[in-house]
Amino acid sequence: MQIYDLLTIFILLIFAWLWWWDRGVKQHAFKLCKQQCERSDVQLLDDNIHIKKIKLIKNDNGELKIYRQFSFEFTYTSEQRYLGTIELLGKRLLSFQLAPYQI
Image (cartoon, rainbow, N blue to C red; front, top):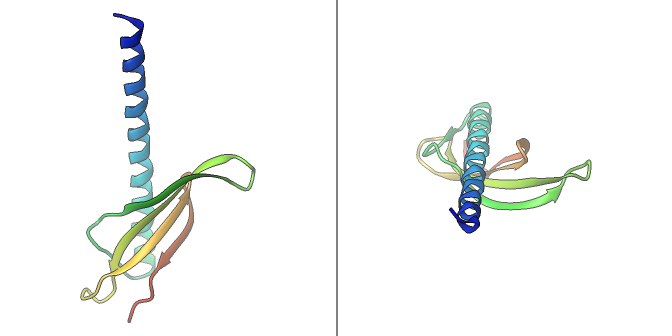
């Protein structure tokens, strides 16, 4: 086995680890979104959230963290769909917003 083969395997392992880690963050965001929807007395539709934005930003301590913004659809009346967003910095919830909906 040559050094290039080892390097290729190492790079593939890093990408697999990053993908696995990102899936964990998305699952955490989904759980937070579902909890916030229940507190707001709305129903999360399709049991799914979609990544909208991802970037590196500094937190209050000056540390670089990954900022993620997810979008999702919800309903209050089971007749109309509305959009919402949830924002995370690392795994910490920054904001949860629901579009105005008719009660």
